[in-house]
Every structure is written in structure tokens, then in C-alpha cells.
Amino acid sequence: MPSATRDTDATMVDAPAEEGAVESPAPEEAEEQRIRVLSGSTEEAASFEFENEDHTLGNALRYIIMKNPDVEFCGYSIPHPSEAKMHLRIQTYDKVSVYDVLEKGLNDLSDLCEVVMDKFTIARDEFNAKKASTT
Amino acid sequence: MVSQTELDRRKIVGINAETVTNVTSTDYPGQWPGEDHSWDLDFFKKTFNVQFHSNDEFDASFSLIGLDASVANAFRRILIAEVPTVAIEDIFVIHNTSIIQDEVLCHRMGLIPFRGSRDGLRWMHWFRKGTDEDPEGSTHNDYNVCILNLQIECTWQPGGQNRAVNGETDPNKLYNNHNVYARDIVYEPTGQQISRFADDPVRAVNPDILVAKLRPEQKINMRMYAMKGIGADHAKFSPVATASYRLLPTIDILKPILGLQAQKFARCFPKGVIELQPVTREEAQRKGSGYEGHEGEMKAVVKDPMRDTVSRECLRHDEFKGKVKLGRVRDHFIFRVESTGQWESDELFLESVKLLKIKAQRMKRGLAALMR
Image (cartoon, each protein chain N blue to C red):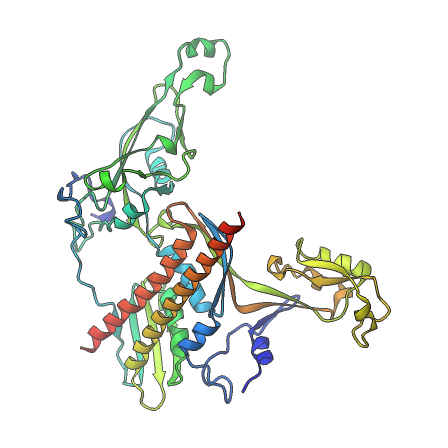
């Protein structure tokens, strides 16, 4: 039976009554591994497969990794539109490890997001304050 | 050391009548001899800039300046497809004798945007549906399901039948409840929801959405489970009506455009983009300015390129040939985020940035596990 047609007519169970005691009642799930190294990879030239990722992470990661001077080539592709998989190819110069390059890319991307959040919050608060003072 | 004018020139995407030029960014190491361009957080901190244009509750517009298209696009994509909202997912149709079929009605219910206590909605957990691998899925609980009911029946107004016989056709004068609106959906808080949504219950963002029409003796009775989901799964979960960006247009007037030509030039653009100003005495006296002997005449001046739609109309007229250059700034993204009403627009953007960061960090953990 396809999962979409499964009978979901179940009775509701209330969470334990004590308020605040159960802040996170849903069971924490173990994180599944979503990265895989494709065959034929070496230390300085590898293709990674990201499951359930698309252009959102692919293109942003490609940009930030291409910003690394140790990188000879970086590109991403989505080999088939009906498979939720994204391939990322990295080749480096001078025996630099592709794993280090990928890790640095992910770090740089988080740093970038942090800066965007900070600057956005400051600009918004300034704008709101200015608007409040003029009205 | 590369000059600032050269860097500014590289930022402009050229727009011609039929073609575009200089479309891809070239700020990578190894692209330009003697230039670095490698990722530098401090440089980014210095150059990246945010400007707000408007910030209404559900409609914000702002510019992100100094960002690459790949990252701006990631934010836009996350806004549309990955920021979660709560929407009706499962419906039990107990009774439906209306003209509108069960499945169509259910689809309509799913698309209604809901709002409620932001803290309460933030507290909501994912509901995992049963799959072939995991037939059980999540259990229905107060932290992952909001119950909504729609119970409505159309009846005759007192004396309505007589009025109908006498030729009255206005349904407002004949029936009760002949229009079913989103406001008729009743929230049934359970468990912890009773306190968390006490002040701000779950309800339709717009109470006036018409969901169905009824006639006497037709009725609808449905029990609906609203759950957290993301736009990638179904568009009803998308928190935004539109989330888009465009690049800041540039208009460079290379040679003077005067008099009647200036008026025609201004009409090639939306209102407020081009302004007509009189040529000053100074300009008229300056040799080689092109304004010599034109003191007092009206000249075309670019006032507000942000309002331009880049229709390229001015490039169709021969008299402006060589006098104007259109372009767009490659790293100036004018975002417009219009929320469907569950979250505030600016909040949504911050959430999208946060989600990209979480994504990167999650992948980092995955990479670390891979190396082990």
C-alpha cells in the first residue's frame, strides 16, 4: 500500500501534563549520513555525493570553494532530476586534501551566514527605529 | 593593485538592445594576474552591506550589497522551499453534501494560510508520516498536530422559502451560511496547546477566504490536522507569497540629452527614474561638456535607477544611440519578501540565512563522520 493512502485516523495522545517539564517531547533522531565519496577519488581530486541537497547548497558551496586559492576546479551537478542527489567535484593544487578544502568551504559558508545575519539585524533595527521616530 | 574604477566596471552587467555582456562573476583566485580574490571574512565584513527600503509586517524590501548570486539565490530558494510553516495536511471528511467535491475541498483547505502564536508555532515539532520503511511514523500528539474543525450547515432564513417563491433571488435574503469562509474553521487546542495558544489561537490569516458555497440542507463536517512542513514538499507550506530579487539597474547618460529629446527620453522609463533639470550656467560654460550654449534648456538626469524596470525602450530609438548605456550591478540584490502571514517577512529572511548555516554545519558533521 502506498504510504500516502495509509490510514492515519489515529486517536490523539496528549503529552505529559506538567507544563515546561517536557520542553522537547519528540524523540531526538540520530542524524543520517548524507555525504558519500564517489569511487575513483584521490586525496586531491574527489567527487562527493550529497543526498537530499540541490542547487541551494550546491551553488553556494561551489562559489565559496572556488574562492579557495588551493582549488584547481570545483563544480556541482544534479545528475538526474528525479533523484534528490547533488554531486560536488573538487580538484586541488599541490596535494592539498580535498577533505580539508570541503571543510573550509563549509566553515566559510557558516561564517558568511553569520555576517549576513548580523548586518541584516542591525540594518533592520536602524530602519525600524528611524521609521518609528519619524511617525 | 587593481583600481576601484576597474573593480566597479567589472561589477556591471551590460545590457544592450538584444544582448547582455559581462554576465559571470570573475572574483575568483587565478582569474586576474596579480589579484588575490580568495575568501576573506574581514573583507566581506567590510564590503557587505544591507539597506532597507520598506519593512511592513508581511512585506519587506531590502538590498543585499556585496554578495555573490549563488549565495543570494540560496537565501531565496530557502525562503520559498525550506522555511517551515504549519498548514492543514490530513482531513477527515465526515460529511460533505456541498457542490464541491471532497478532494477539491480538501485541497482548498490545505492552501489556506494560518497564523497563531509565534512561540507556539515555533514549539511545534515535525510530524513524520508513515513510510514503507517506517510504517508507524509519528504518533499524533499535541506538539505535532493542530486540530481544526469545520462544521457548517446551510439553512433557510425564516420566511425565505416564501420570498423565493415570490421571485427573490438574492441568496443573502434567502439562506443562512450559504457562503463558507475561512473564519468558520474552528481551532480545537489540545494538551499544551491550550496554554501556548491561549492569547493567539490558530486561525486563518485572512478570515474572508471563500472556501465553498452551500444551499439549504447541504452541510460540511470536517476534522482537519494541521502540521509543520516545508515548501519543497508542497507549495502550501511555503511561507512566502513571493520571495524574489532583482539586480540594481544602472543608467549612464554618456552624452547630453536635451530639450524635447530629454522629454522623450524620460518617457522611455517608468515615472521617477529620469528627471528633467535646467542646464546651469556653469555647465554651459564648461568646454567639452556638450552643454555649451544650452543654458536654461532642460537636460535628462538619472534620478532613481532603482525604479527602472530595464525595459530597454530607450535603446529602440535612434536618437539615443551612443548616448545611453544600460546595465545592472552584479552584486546588488534588491530582495522583496512577501509573507503569507504566518511569519513576519524580515523574520523569514533571517530564518533562511540561519537554515543555510545549519545546513553547512550539518554537512560538516557528516564530513567528520565520513573521515572517521
